[in-house]
Image (cartoon, rainbow, N blue to C red; front, side, top):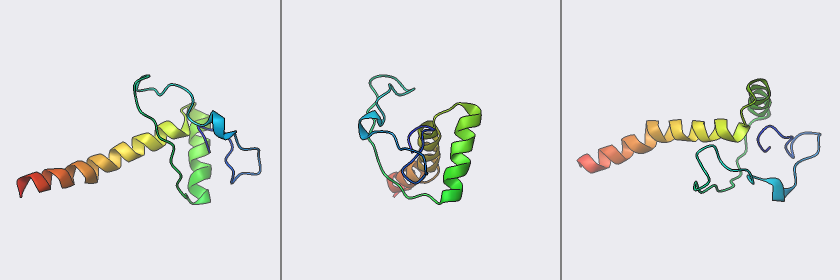
Length: 85
């Protein structure tokens, strides 16, 4: 599943590995982008795919936003607590 394209889990053809994350990220050309693999329940994949289709925002952008939210909730809070010890 790459940015609204069919995934290897879908019956449709998957994009070639060379096409993965080739475009310039919305954060700018200097941003380091690393490919990763996660297992996600099919229901969430379908909902994310539909959201991306409706909004025309790449699935990867939504996933990066979700990671940022989690790091803000847990990552930065944990670092703050360590600094106070």
